[in-house]
Image (tube, rainbow, N blue to C red; front, side, top):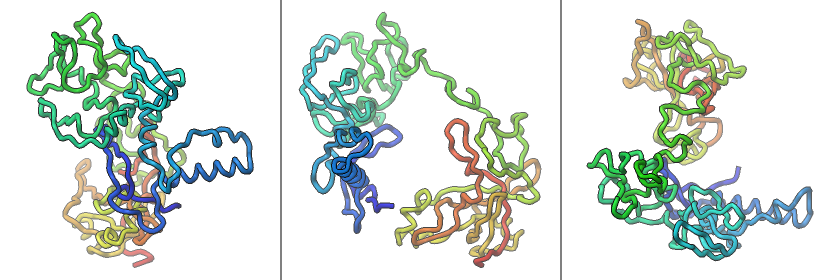
Length: 409
């Protein structure tokens, strides 16, 4: 493991779920020997290339001839990387665009993905980001908070949204066949019949409204051009269905099929023995830690806030098991067991399942054996059953038992 800089300790871009790519600057120098991940990758390539140049090897061309030009300084030039992701012309190029003829010189930035060519005259790291770093500069670094007249919070001059700075994808679905908004009070895009162009957000596809002889349906990434009620590639069927978790104390009341028949369970050990494992277990995160805790459990001020692995339970369950807040407890499933401190709260309460009270316990997934703060991993307990669509494990629901005490009590 190499010491890598945190996000605040390096310059670069970050993209959010709204598709906004925003540029941020280094707020502090990385501590000790920590380096940016870009520096680490850059050094890997440069040193491997030198070895190939010196010693040769099987098929060295992909290494020694790779276009890798991010500067010779101590830190690679992150702006060169961003420009390469945007795309650039590798040679002088003339492109006919509708009624215009555009001239580009070798080395100039591609203005948008429609200008990318299939003849080798352009190179682009990721087509959806083409337009993010143009001849006008770094679009991701823009900070103009002027909104469009619609006042919908689209802010087209703040940062940059992929693709082509379009803030709402499939935005032509918000208008009727004549190109006029279904909701005049919330105008995302509208067709100007006199000027024969769209106004508002960047149109998703430049075609005129559907009523026009040259019009096109709005969902340009679908062959049929219209929206879909279901996805075509769902391996467990096109329509939503409720299945119980692989380990559940309840019968599926909505379907005759108890669990998803398409899950990838492999040789995972599953038990629905509610006598042996009478409680529902779940996992979650806390504000103070991140994922498995590799970063946050090494930061003293975060460790001070949440220093230990715990299992949260209701007051009724704690009373039933003779457990007090802060006691050491052992949680077990058919797959293994862990120890943790009891956290007795009013937040968790028993469910009523088929007329019976069923208790639930919860654990954070942030702990492990390394770092400043250590603790047993909650995923020792969970079932490695994978969704047939996303391959996400079923770590949120399982059956378990809990007992007071443990080897480290």
